Length: 169
Image (cartoon, rainbow, N blue to C red):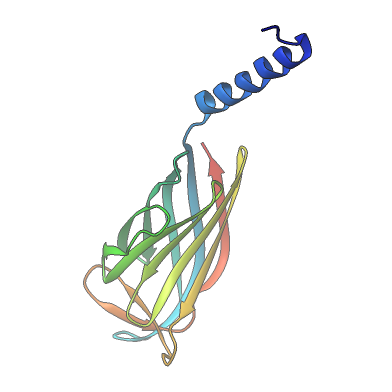
């Protein structure tokens, strides 16, 4: 059996692309940060409290992901660990649960579920760049947001995002 030269050339190129893509597929590591402010009523009434979040995350070629995000208000901090893949269930986290949703090979949605709300960080990765967005979501029927500092729930108004960033490492 004789192979046509053009067909053989295309076959070699196609196999080379398949194997080189598999060999170079690698995890994407990135750093996330955001800042904002919040007004709280209970247990202590305070206005314009600075809040920030910082963390690192990894998006793997197999669709799994992990992250660690530390949220700080004044001097009180909570660190939330996220692990996920498509269809993963929530995991225990300080004051509630955490869940990571992977959307394709380029997106993550980190959700910290608290009694009255979810604190969400959405990340999109494109090549060597990425973007992050912080989003507080109030649960139906609730009127105040809850923040957890590791010991106490604080009841607050809607957290206001000021800045967010993402950097591929």
